[in-house]
Image (cartoon, rainbow, N blue to C red; front, side, top):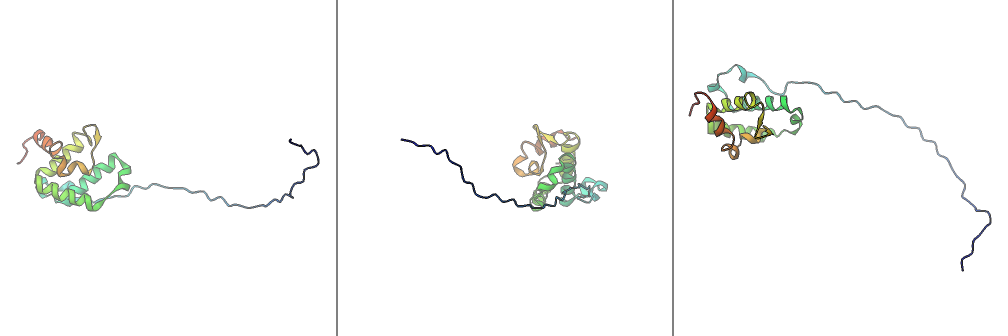
Length: 138
């Protein structure tokens, strides 16, 4: 059997606490700062160093994908560019330039990043571009 109580309900006394809060607006400002030097722009292809190649590739990637500037791995980028320069010699800057001027920074429906310049991509990327270059050097 359930009984119901109809009497007055006792409640605990209520307390009110006032808290003041200061709201500080947070603003962010994006500023354009040069990321890399541009000495490679005035050098002939034969004089490009792996650093020049890296600078060119990085500049072009960030131009097309600004968020890429925050996802950098400078050590890996430099290693990829050194190896790419060793494998392709004077064609290395030509391949990079083709990738960003003719192909507009896209390859096989994907934006070009440093991984495209790795040895694993040569068959599907660099070697195809070499075949398309006018007067390519071997």
